[in-house]
Length: 164
Image (cartoon, rainbow, N blue to C red):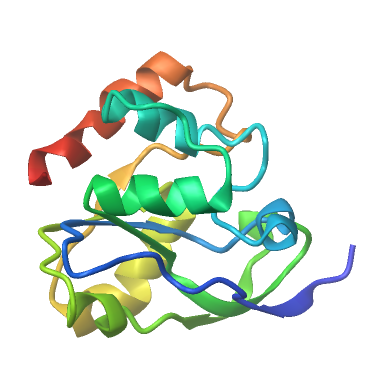
C-alpha cells in the first residue's frame, strides 16, 4: 500500500473549561470517514472514558462533543499532516505537527495526556520543548493494542480524573 500525504481533517474539541488535553497521533481511516475522533467501532476510547467518568457511552458526534466538554476534556491529535499507509501509526513519515497553542491559550489545561506510543514520540520530539510541558503516556485504546483489556485500560486512564 502506497503512503499518501494526508491533512488532518478534524478541528480540536475544547472550550475554556477544558482541564485535560488528550492527544492521539493521527485520525484513522475510519475516523476520517466518520468525521470524528476514535471512529473505529473497535477503538475503546469512548468506552474507557465512559467508565472513567461513570457516564453513558456517547454514540453520535454531538453526544461525544457534549461528553468531552461536560467532563473538561479537550481532544486533538499531535499530527497536522503526514504520509501514512491506511491507519498504520508505524508507517507515519514526514510529520507536520498541530499548533497546540490554539487550545493552551484558551483553556487552563492542567495535564497533557497522549493516547499511545506514537503520539508520545511525536509530542516529545516536536512539541515538548516548544510548549515547555511534559506529557503523560496512556496505553493506546486502539484495537491494535489487544494485550490491554477494557478493565486494564480503564484502570490506567482513571488518572485523567485527577484534573477535574
